[in-house]
Image (cartoon, rainbow, N blue to C red; front, side):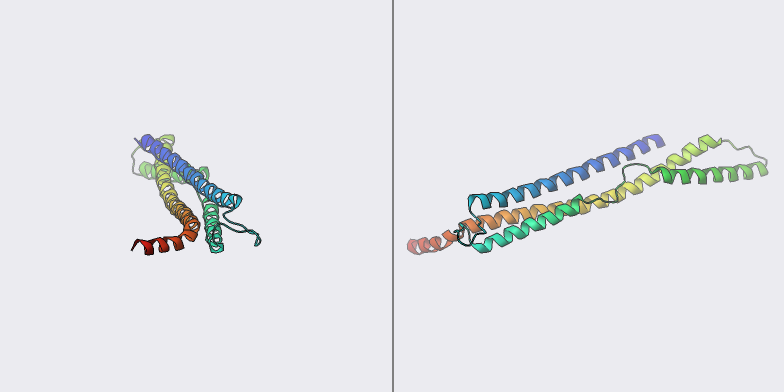
Length: 191
């Protein structure tokens, strides 16, 4: 029974690892789309750094586009940085656990023999059972820690997507900005 629980915990850790990879890939996709949007806007001539050239969108619009791109880049770097991640059992922890289990076994065996009883389990059986129980407990804790990391990274990814949508909104507003004055004139004529 413990073997199945152990395998289930390992599968949970593996699926969490895949989720972290997906979050990182999606954040890079948002950064790529954002940088392409700004690059194409510049290449088409919507934004111009040259004061002698006429820009198709107002100069104020280039600042929010740049700030949203920088904000997305910072969030992506936070998502991509290494984290305290658990992907399986740590051998160092289990070596220490095995030593503790062996000492506990010898102590219980001495107590049983002192009472005149025989000890039913042998050391290898006891060690395997106890090590599996210890491994399952450690894997559960590690999975919970991974889940906290995934929640933080998901929030950062959602912030990246929100900034990208804000960037698109700024670009659309900037493109439509020259026409807002004409809309007011048209509305006056329609009255």
